[in-house]
Amino acid sequence: MRRPLLPLLSLAFALACTSEDPAERASELAFVVASTAPSERAGVGALASIPGDEGVGVARSAATSGPRDAVVLVHGNGGAPSDWAATVSELLAHGWAASEIFRPSWGSSFCVACNNHCGSEIAPVRAAIRDALAVSATGRIDVLGHSMGVTLAGRAILEEGAASDVDAFVSVVGAFRGLRSCGSYPFSVPNATCGYCGLSVGSPLVSSLRSRRFGAFQAALYSTVDGVVCNCGFGYSASCCNVSGRHTGIPDVVDWAANTGLGHFASQSNTPATQRALIE
Image 1 (cartoon, rainbow, N blue to C red):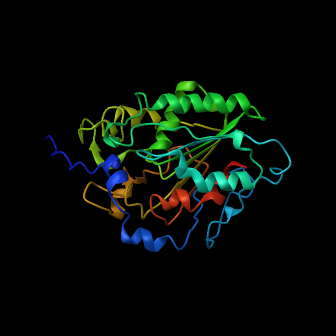
Image 2: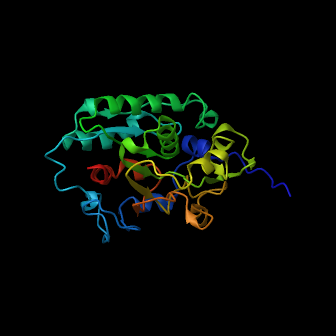
């Protein structure tokens, strides 16, 4: 039976119009880290809960003395490169040069529901990956994405054939299994963000990114109080975080994952030390 279309409260509109759930705001006072997978990266493994964004002891011991990977930071739908301001400040304070940090601007900020992963949106991200590789002192890069920027970055890496050139791929509240607010393909919310090349559950785009590795080390910061990702189309619900029994913010292939306990936007802006530590 054809399911009724969900209201147009997709990721596109949630990013542009919806404030975070009160539970999210309360959670922004504490960043609780819970490791879900071991890794060979120094310091990643069984982690205790810690107060605040302190880098979770992930950094490699020799990271401060050698050359660094160039970094690509991909903002979310309707966002802007400036959304990474806290992360850029953190990187600059820990030895990266401004010329080693790339922040592509993609998509329309006026019609966010028009943005998807297959049109003109992906070209700036692919160009940033090429530019970062061209200047990287190590010959490799690190890629971080926020929200829809996660899946857009993943697709761009695959299209560039660059997965073997990515040292670390870090997802910040992405939606690898799709968004329940977008519905299920092909009966998804009728806009580009949720359609064939968008984030509806089971869409061709989402299916193409399942069980893929986008870098040698793959990490995810997700949240169970995310009012955008954990949304079935009618507002925040913890049960809406999961798609097919797994939080949509955790990729099928993951070396390390942590629940930020923060809202959708605070998970990006309030975790710069953790982001930096995951790529060192």
